[in-house]
Length: 463
Image (cartoon, rainbow, N blue to C red; front, side, top):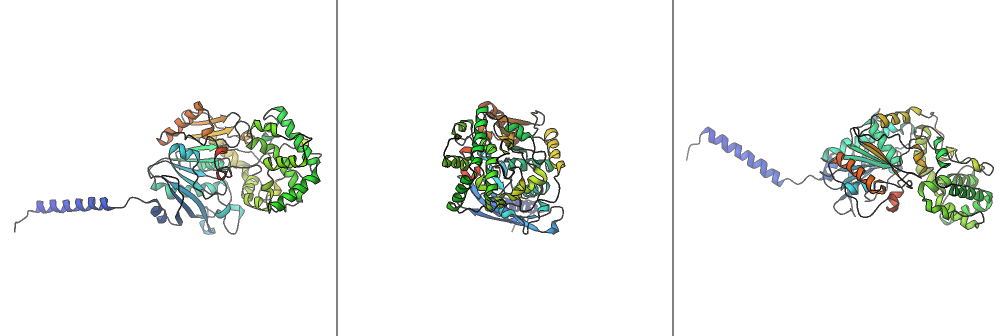
């Protein structure tokens, strides 16, 4: 047997350690997103079938404090849907602002970036509602803390950049998150996000009085008056519609109030979801009762005045009444025909909130967006009445912020709605934020072309 020197023994020992380390690394399984999520305290996750090609489709429920200032008040489970691509790809954080559909739909921003996507249900909606409901803890700061905890929990798995995004109330939610936690994500794309300054913000009436051709506005007003002048007939049509579709309208004030709120809202929604080409479809005063009613169904918010619709969106109305604000509808031309005021939001909540409107909240957000925000783009449609309350977003180079307007665009515009020049500018911003060169998909040019589930997560008037 040969005698080995201390140096040779040390060399052999180090070599064995290196071999063991590299051999173990070669045998170690790749990092698994589902396995990682299972290690996060309070998080449940499960794979779902029918994932998009190249993705995993995962449903997540995450235990959140009802009150982030005092976690001892209890918890609720917040629902999310993750479409995971790779740990290195960018992540799009989709803040819905409402409930979410559990579906494998990829939003345009995730498509152009080839990104993973995390869609989050807002607190107090659908499955993400604490029980029992205590409305005191539904405010923009509590929601921002929800999203902050989610980012803290999931982002460590990913090495790519994060961009938050949302449409309408989802875009508002994204900006509130950025206000309180500006470094959670690397950029934000907000679509058609309004910022109302108080209850019954008058800027919306000014906008409604000037949007579109005068002839179209006049035709809509004549249509509204014609429907209200046939009140009893239209109530009978609503009653039949409810029976055929198994809908319940138990709003205080009965079908008179349902009709008034629907018709008072219709003018706003026509421009919110329509196109100026739709002006030719407005029924003439001589139209039949059925033609008037069919147009009401097409453009009015009748389904959202059902018991189910009001219950589903009550959290939004609570927020609107206490912090977010809401529009004043153009109804002066209907006063002699209305029995109920369409601008009375008490119809949409089970109990009017006790606390007064918090004017400071939106002015604080406005100051942040105008003066301090970085890496933000906002996109609006020129005929969308919500554009009356567009954020005051400056176009800056040093902060990389920009507001884009889509001519003739409604409440369904997104980054793929921009013309070639503006889209190139928007894509350049995304590339600066993420290091990934965006590529426009051949299809899906606007939210209106998306599956219905995507459209349903856009804000509706009065919702």
